[in-house]
Length: 315
Image (cartoon, rainbow, N blue to C red; front, side, top):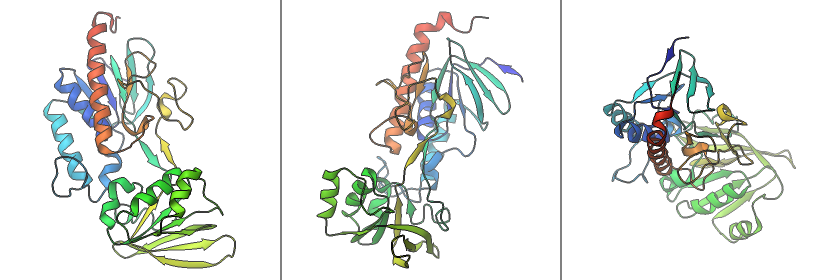
């Protein structure tokens, strides 16, 4: 493959973190390339309405936000390549990026590959994603004011988000496959005291159904073998989240779930290698926090490149 030696920084991932990093890096004078293997935008492009992103009085779609971010990144001459990164060499001051089409030599790398929710893999889940199926109550909860929703899962995230949803929904079902919740006791206690919550235990979702939007879930009770339907307007799924961190597996520090650990500047333990957005260990996974991570990573990469400019890529 042809070897390209034209870029200061390579950003892997075209979601909000990656695009924000591209905007800040390119605007800061770095020759910037962004790689995305599929569709620019990541998970946000399937979000029908976003109403908590600052600066937008009226609800906008995730696609609209990403389109503006991409245009801004391109305005500052970010080179966006729809190429899947197959391997990366991160040791030393020269970084090698190998994609499906070419090989690139760069000075710094920002990993912004994101994470994806663990799916239920039941009929209707994919069809209604963004139209009643959600993986983020903080993002979409306010859209279900005075409606009925279901939360699938029994861990801390599921129960905490179910409690959050009661601020908007008139009723929230918690569907969990075990006979008791897995959330910590203090969170369970709060949930059991909340009159808007109804617990459907020993049960699994078999299907999500509706016409244009979610209208009901079909659930199977593992104890009684009964099948029944619950009429709901939305389904929030919390059965785990999987970081897309395999590209740097065993080369940077991960937490127990596989999320990349960085310092406050988004620097990993490898010189010149940064991570941003949902692939990192963090408290809140939202578009605004991903953008913040991306900006910080780009700013930090720019400073690092300046400090090491005389040592780079010596043939």
